[in-house]
Image 1: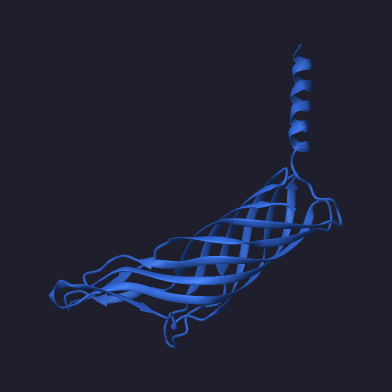
Image 2 (image 1 turned 90 degrees about the vertical axis):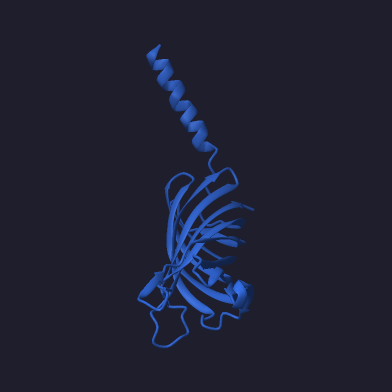
Length: 215
């Protein structure tokens, strides 16, 4: 009886593994995807005077955005695949409110081009790493300042203090179930996006979760 249960369990495991997508060697698969971002900018710190005495530092905070695009994956062997794609990413950061400023948000509408090497640990489960180029097609800052009489006034800027181009290292993990792909990826900025001389370098930091479908 115990042997029968063991055989039945192994059969169920084999059947479940068979349901995981495994691309054939030499096959090129296209995967449209959409998801959400959690992003910030590391190193972009703000110091301000408080009541004219001393300084206080504001740390960049995380903000939520979205991502959408398409990637192509070429299966070079049973365990290794090479992927490349074009992905739109809405990213940026926030700052906490201070006495005379509130609701600060920076926004980067960025097109990323990732190139990754994917290693399939087991059927359907892959870890990946590579290099990514990003170009910001639109950027900006929005905030409110307190003026005379305690009145709050909204302002916007073009984000000219930031560069359009950056390079990052994406690392992540994906899990395929049939044609569905669930993926978590982290993009670690290598190049500074600050365009102001004499200030500390600043880099994008982005977590991405996406759902894709293999065509």
